[in-house]
Image (cartoon, rainbow, N blue to C red; front, side, top):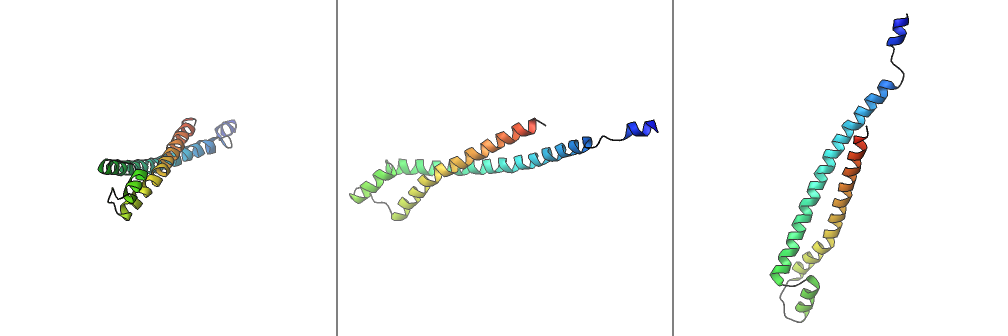
Length: 116
């Protein structure tokens, strides 16, 4: 009977191990998802940055200057193009912020996972 008592698991000991394993598994899944979001954000930031650089090179000026030049009759540019330029200028910091937040979340998650 003494052997049976020694062989019994301590309540909560194995549950903690199983819980830890479960958290690590979920962390891996979350890391994969967040890494995917980071990749997507980087692609979008890259495309927007490239589009803005192309417009600056094409028109040899910034958006505000392009608006003034158009009003003065020195630049022919469609309303749609000006609108897209404006949208990209507004979207870039939003996407950069989103990217930063995902990167911070991933770093925090990795720190938390390493403490198990």
